[in-house]
Image (cartoon, rainbow, N blue to C red; front, side):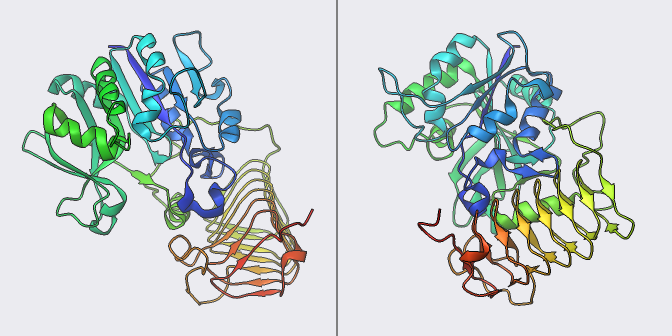
Length: 424
């Protein structure tokens, strides 16, 4: 059975606030040394699937640079195997920006058809999980399905974030609703679909001809297929997280620090591959203290790091404290500073003696109350926090801000520091 794997990686990740400002959601760093898309790519190659195409759209540059020719995943292979990047493009026919997940495949239908695979496996590039897709593909074949959807149960308060379905005793899907406000069912789509390729191409053509369609799998393709085709649910058992919110992103990173983490990154039978820079080993200073943390290569620790995840090249100077935080590449925490309950993007400077993410006030961020509300402060890429600043919780410090952007050194919880317009 020949399989073409398509990874949808064009998402903007707007719920991640400024973390998604300069990169596609699948390119966001995770777990210290990884990026989110590493999990879908690694699951594919660990499942013996080496014909892979990644569909990009929003700010694809860092994602494309990360994937490259696919060497870390053993995807630098001769065609038809290997990895390809499919971007939207303007042509003589109806190519344009992807209007939805189904339209992304429709605009690449010629490539899908020319590949000649019997089966098309469609994945989302922005979820954290480990899965052997061979079991899913076997299930699809045994049920004789036209479409198989991988599913799992979610909490009742989360149904509004997912496609929710009902199934009969044989796991055939009987109803499907995209992101309902409430539902008696908690069975959710994981954004993993197995199609018979010729059947997929036919349904994409029909959807493209419908002027009323949003050209989306969850809104259009799957509900229409449930009504007329053989659509089955594949119950997934294991750890799977959509890290599409600040709270989910922060807490999922810190779950890796548990004594028995729900996601085992050290399992040599199922390695999560990534592109790693050549950096020096981690260096611990004579008075440093590190507890229950993940530290990536190139980190230099002179201060204290507790219950935190540090990406490559992070420096924590003497007397500085990092607690319950996710710190991305090449960030510098100056002497005496405190960073607590924060997500800090790349190449940030936290000035000497500054305090970031402190206090007990949990007022949501005034600019983004629906995104920054869980007590976590977000600091954008290349921001420079001035020495002595005191920044509360649920704050947003915009990318590339400098000490000149601060009207006061005290930033109350829920406030935002914006980069001044016109500053060179």
